[in-house]
Length: 273
Ligand code: C2E
Ligand code: CA
Ligand code: CA
Ligand code: CA
View (cartoon, protein in one colour):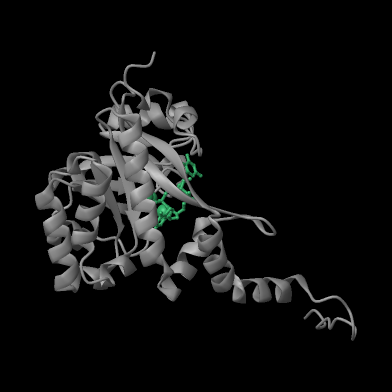
């Protein structure tokens, strides 16, 4: 056994202790970030496997803190969920994303992530309808990405909200399928329009990747769902998806997320060469 190492009295706090302190300060820092306008969006394209044409653009939240630098979404989204701040932040993201899509024009959808916590607000579908009306985005140009959470599906309020959104013409996608809580019952119970296969699937060892991908594509497509494969980083990945019959793809090879839509997705602007 290694002897336990105690820092000498008066020594600088350990990195672990610093991390705990800085995590404890996150809710307050996030509130400040909202007030000071330190949140922004990055945009990443989703493309058709056949010809690489643009299908949709995902809006991804960014937090640039003057002291901490960029704080990753996987660090601060859970904080926003625990504090309920995600309801306010989520509405801001949706409005910003819709405004950006209207300004660019074109037929592609803007894809916005919705946290399960946002279904706790009394009228999520009404909130979305208001933002669509105020920004002038046609409902057919909006896609919402829901991360699968089994308990969520049991709530009549969530089911009702999803049903109303789809009736308006908003596309609803199941995000991160093949990871975490994902399972097939969820595909059966909820009538999603689209499913996104988590990028952990392309990260499997080559011997398993093709088999797992083939199976998940078959399951999803048997439910009549279009499939986006996430995490396409190499031309080899891209070739395999085309061969296996995936519908759409997203990943660094096809476009990295960037704050400037014109840089991230040059073909998002119709009428420009
Ligand atoms: P997600 O919805 O699964 O988004 C895709 C993530 O994969 C993004 O990470 C994106 O930058 C990353 N990615 C895309 N292509 C590649 C690739 O080829 N390789 C690799 N290694 N990564 C790739 P990001 O932006 O860090 O976001 C992480 C997660 O944070 C998102 O996962 C989503 O769950 C959450 N998130 C981001 N923005 C929002 C938001 O506005 N609202 C909510 N509720 N959650 C958000
Ligand atoms: Ca997503
Ligand atoms: Ca995802
Ligand atoms: Ca994810």
